[in-house]
Structure formats: C-alpha cells, structure tokens
Length: 119
Image 1 (cartoon, rainbow, N blue to C red):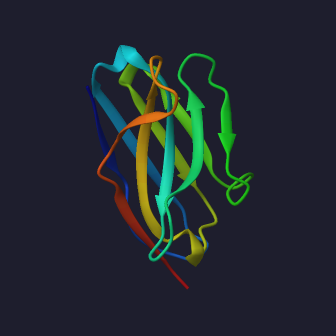
Image 2 (image 1 turned 30 degrees about the horizontal axis):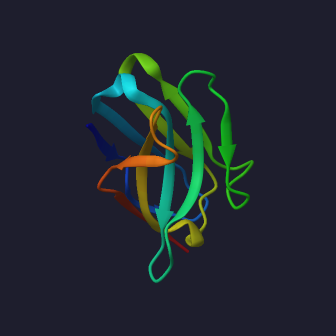
C-alpha cells in the first residue's frame, strides 16, 4: 500500500499563491506517476496535473495550464503543486493520488487538503 499526506491548504486572496505538497510512504517503489485532483463544492472531482516519477513528463488540465506547476522530489517521494495567480474558482479540496506500475489509473489517494481563494 501507498500512503499519501497532503499539506499546504488554507485561505488566500485572489491573485495570491500557494504550494501544496504530497509525501508518499509505504510501497513507493511501485509508483509510476503522481497527480493532483480537485473537487469544488457541488462539483465532481477533476484532474488538475500529473507527473511521471521516471521521466518527469507533466500533463495539465486546460483550466490550469500555464498557471500551475507540478514538480517532484524523488528523493523525498514528494510531489508539489505550485499555484500562483489563484482565482476564486480554484477553491476546492485538492487530492494527491498515485498510479502504480500495475494499475491502469490512479489507485491510491490522499485525504485531501482544502483551500479557499477569497475575492
């Protein structure tokens, strides 16, 4: 099993910045990629960004492309999401997730970290 712990949520004003962190533990050798998802109030969970732990290749949702940056520190089994220029519509619970070599998608999830962007 893989355990994930997110941190970095809180309250920020529109235009401000936050950095989320997600540290993985347990069977980290099984992780192929890590990603961030978010779920806004009354909406379904959506993909935000993902990164391959081997190649470093990244992928972003159109809604955050050019604004958010996902990065990783393999030595610390940690992935980050740098979010400058925050907008009220970025308000959500953000979840970290991992995809294993043996899976066809994200198969481990963190508990989520909430942040609110005030206008």
